[in-house]
Amino acid sequence: MKRNLIPRLAAPIGLLAISIGVFAESPNIEFEEFDLSNGMHVILHRNTDAPVVSSYVLYHVGSKDERPDRTGFAHFFEHLMFEGSKNIERGQIDKLISGAGGNLNASTSFDRTDYYINLPSNELELALWIESERLMHAVVDETGVETQREVVKEERRSRYDNQPYGSLMENMAAAVFAGTPYAWTPIGSAQYIDEATIDEFRDFYKKWYVPNNAILAIAGDIDLANTKRLVERYFGEIRRGTDPVRVDIDWDLKAAGTAKSVVEPMTPLPATVHIWRAPVLTHEDAEAIDLLISILATGKSSRMYRRLVDIERAAVNSAAFTWMQEKAGLVSAYAIGNRGVTIEQLDSLIEAEVQKLIDEGVTDAEFQKALNQKESEIASSVGTMSRRAQSLANNHLWYGDAGRINRELEAYLKVTKEDLQRVAKTYLKKERRNTLHYPVPEK
Image (cartoon, rainbow, N blue to C red; front, side):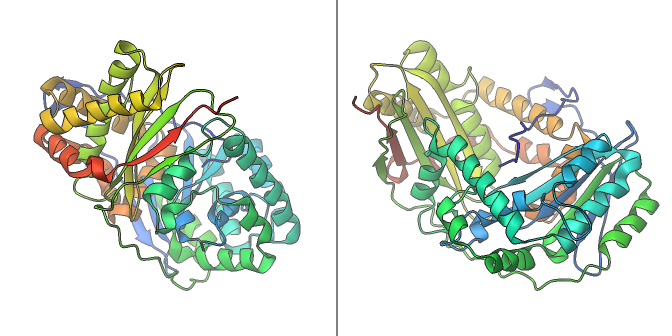
């Protein structure tokens, strides 16, 4: 979750499908990568189209790496790392970057925490200094911890506790990821953040914020030789930490489904959510699942939206999405009903559309449209230097191959229409479905 909820947008670079199954070539993104002696992996991409540069630091730690009685630590540190350092006064990081004409942010997920800084290219050294300070000299003291405790609790109240359907993510995770460290979401529990001691926060920092648990990606108008020297200057002398011990998860895709009714006073309209367990993000079926869910319920021309919203007038909105993580995954479809429509009606309509996918598969036109949409999405994802740096780092972390940035579309083009029906039959079984109902409370 991003500190300021900045939407993930980038300008498309204009790739178009020219016929069924035939696509224009994506630009080849060249890069260099190397390891520092302390274990930090570095990726450099030079592009001189504009005098800008983006630094991106990816730490392999997320909410699944927390203790069950100390949830929210990874997200808490996303905030705490903006407090200051031994050599940067409290509250000055944002001001230093904005004063240099740049912007910055951070986000936390189940599996990782990341920080990006975008600046004019002549200010690259400022970004590297700040990130090295955060890694080596972050100040974890009572003042910063108490300040961020209140910030995080207010974020939880405004985005989750006091919003209609605000508990949806937490209930989905608890249902589908039960028995695993994915059963809680990155926002965590305000109770555990309050209970944690300063030494527990310091221990978390020492364990996870080490160079051998980090990837640094830099993209933009850079001189490669000089950038290597700067990286070595600012990060090379940071001591390697102990390699973190990672949680092991036995992910059972065949677990039986559950059902739960969530009665909350702020629920304005009835809603239902159907959730199935899915494989991990690097699984060979990941691309097929992604395309299948796009056809089922992504956009107003999708099957579910047309059926539930346009034709039946049963819902005001419907959609589907995937959460495929490092060691677990899910797919979900939901509908928010019109007044007077029962949750059972919504369930029946979603079931019918899912069953149709299982029984009949998808059409040629739907399949090609999903591929076209994916191509546009992939092209957009590398349309800025910030997005290129992020993609390079994430491909290295999850796939062990930063060069996958140039081959992501190939993975989708290998998927067949028959694969989509196969994954529907494999993963969207009714007996494995978890269901959440949000009824409108009685007045």
